[in-house]
Length: 426
Picture 1 (cartoon, rainbow, N blue to C red):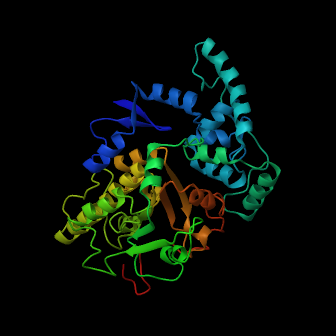
Picture 2 (picture 1 turned 45 degrees about the vertical axis):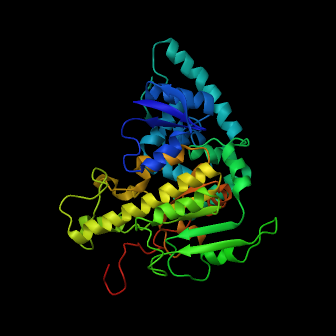
Picture 3 (picture 1 turned 30 degrees about the vertical axis):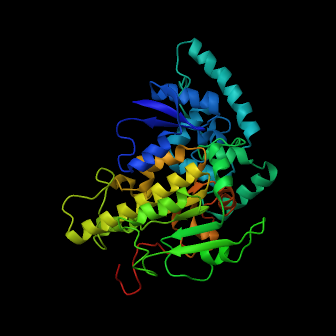
């Protein structure tokens, strides 16, 4: 396997890349790749840290050598960071009590760690070598995550030691630099004649939806913004995006500069984690996909196979369209449920593990943010992930809600959303 540097992100490129994407997406994104390759993941990691300033997320929370959740002394900050990586409960509690440290503080701590790690390497040890066993300490520990005390502590620390944008960006795997003028940007300036935004899979029009919010706005330059809502439920004949002619037609609109932004949430009924409740308690519809069988489990009925096929068609439709918008210098988004960590032992399928999505995330013009919808006023928690194309303010605003986009409410406030209706049907 070799690795390529694309924009400001490093991605693997091998014979299986984009195996579930389309040839069009591969062709567009392959043009963005440089010739810089790496023979191993270790060489890739060293390059990304040295040239792009990447740091692990735990580096923004690891202070000293003691875990204040389980009260263990690890004798070094490096070992403490490894502990956070391996122990999700401690790491989640620390993030709930403390905001990420500012970039300058992290750099200062990393320099001190580097000096200690250099001494270890001179003696023939790895930088993470544990020279002494961890010790169990006694005393007050941090309050549990999602508690009132944890929330109060987080806000006090944010006031005392405010974080910065760069730290938050690096936590999500992206170093933000000023972006020079590009061919895509110049292309958008030359081709844009009207500001048309398309919301695919929008559902029926309702107050407060994307169409409603954008529809009455006027651009700073005085141009009117036209918003289109496209969904099968509203216009069956012309809004069936699974038809063979739908994709080429919308591709032509995007390639000609007639669309400045497009996006949506492809149907997630075949991916939803609610299906895994059937494996846990024996109720509800069964899973149709898995991590090893992302295009459908063996033994599906004809109706289930059709569900999977339509879901794949609509997802590829939006991936292809975002690829064109990226090349044209336009904007867009893709919304889908967050990877269900609670049932990862069941190997669930998720679009966020697809090679096509990973490759898009690697481009400098894309960003990713995960958040809980309750922080934006929804009744349920519903963890969601957005793939954003040139929409940095959306990401910034979401991270300002709750605890950096995460639920700040007490346990039991939200009802679990498992796809079940009030009458007991799914």
